[in-house]
Amino acid sequence: MTVTRNPRSGSAVRTAAKALAVAAAVGGTPYWLPRSVVALRMKLFAAINGDEGISFPNATVGPDRFQEVYSHPAAGGRSKGAALSDLFWYWLSPGPEVHQEHLEAGPRYDAVARTTATVLAGGSRELAEAAARCAAKVLDETVTGTASLVRLRDLMMPVWAAFFYELVFREPCPAGARRLIVDNAEDVVNSLKCTRPRHMRRRARLTRYLRRRLAAGDVPHELPEGLTPREHAHYLQGTFFNTAVVQLSEGMAHLLLALAEHPEVQHTLAERPDDERYFSHVLNETLRLYPLFGVAHRISTDEIRLGPDTVLPTGSVLCFNYPEYHATGYADPTTFDPARWDRLVAKDQHHIPFGIAANRPCPAWRLSPLVMRAVTGEVLRRFRLHSGVTHTRSIPHRAPCLLERRSHPLPRHRILAARAFLRVRDRWEDVWRSLAQLVFGTWMVLDARRVRPAETYFATHDTQGRPLRQHAGPQHVGPQNPAPERCPFSGRHTG
Image (cartoon, rainbow, N blue to C red):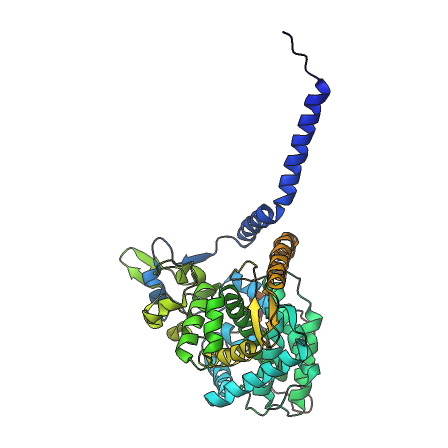
């Protein structure tokens, strides 16, 4: 018997197979493309920046010696001598030359640290009430319906803008100032995450506002000695309205998103708002899994001897990897489990959410848990939280979430539909977001290498901000005729 094959039939099968393969590739784009782009971005960044840093923990210096190296007296250089500093200064400008985190040790750092401690000081009850008041005002203004889809980081940023404004100016935050602070902080964090290029005009608007308030004598604190008026504005902008607003907004976004993902933990916190111990466990676990710092770099100011055959030379760039360190020493390290802290003592674990006492811990280490608990209480008093999005340390999606007002519960099918919507939208947003991060990140790294803000600054100033002799201008300038200040990033006169 002879079987005759129809060539058209075979062609149709091949066409259908190709169509199915294309459809599978397109449909799977949210799963494979972002990972591929992230891997490519890391390779490009490594190629552009070179292999400057020594990462810890590593095969030679394991996690059990991580804090030993981090705490070493010679692991104290902040910016000078590391090409990586150019990138961080680029992202944090204007003002990293007076940013507390980036100042080299000496009188200038001491003066800045004293001022920061004074601004952040206050009684526990007073600080908690101020945070709760700011949160209540923002939540009541921005979430008015029975349910709302929000991005938690965006929701939290006005809260901390208002809170830190009150600490700095000792008065309620007007809407216009809050908007300036939020615009500035959003631009900083979006450029840090490479989801947007930086927009210096947005930051400059806040700088001008702060300079006007400083000139009018509106800041009721003794500001750091030895800084110019422009540097005072940059100090306030960088310490309180960049770093403080961004870090607490990110921290709250992680905490609230974790509660949305773990309804049993959320329920316990809502039912026991005065249980400080349980909240401490939840916060410890959140910051263990999602530390606010990714990699902190330091420059060794002397040799660091770790044994007869292990010496870190002077001038080494030490990169301390918080997420990797926080993942060691725990059973099931990728599982969100606040109960583990019932049997663990945080100071004895691989857990440094606010840094290490011997190497300039976060100045808000005492304040942050206190005010985060107060704001969490305000959120949970009003809403139940639901989300099904991915949760990573960098949260470039800004933590999408459904807020369901407790006084008006939603039908279960609507909650499930909202979770499904958020999950699908997040998957597809991750496609364009990963591509945007590749493009913007590469461009900003290249631009930072071109501008070289840290290297340029230290070419003309010593580590205490004093002009080097060959670059020094007039030494005696009358108060009525001040010398114009030169911006270290653009070279333009600003005064």
